[in-house]
Length: 159
Image (tube, rainbow, N blue to C red; front, side, top):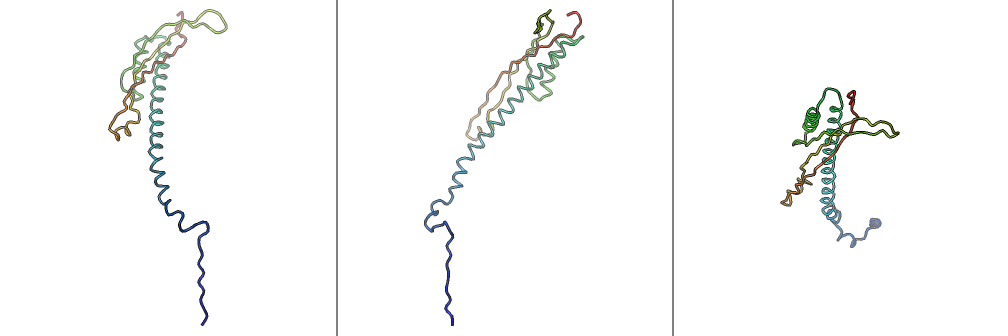
């Protein structure tokens, strides 16, 4: 009868003693970095919503100025247009709108033009990382006041 030889192959680069204490290291690293990553992403999303609100208020000021420089519209029409624009965008609250006549001087010289400046002030409440703050028993509620203005040349003849 022939003798059977047994060949044992070890996996290359792997020692029996090393690696035994490193089990689960990846899981520990994930447990440390995942909350930090989620915190960073939540901050980015909250900032994006704040920036979107700023853009809405800026566009509302443009809309108000555009309405006011047209013939047949008053300051109240411009203020109403600003308020309806902000409401249609889904922002809560009413902005403070002031309409001021201004003189716009052309860059190359010449007679100045009559114009209108519409300034909009809006206080936007937001909660920074709101859902994550409730996990630790707190709230990070704050408010930011946006004050923007838009100036346009009047299209009313003789103004």
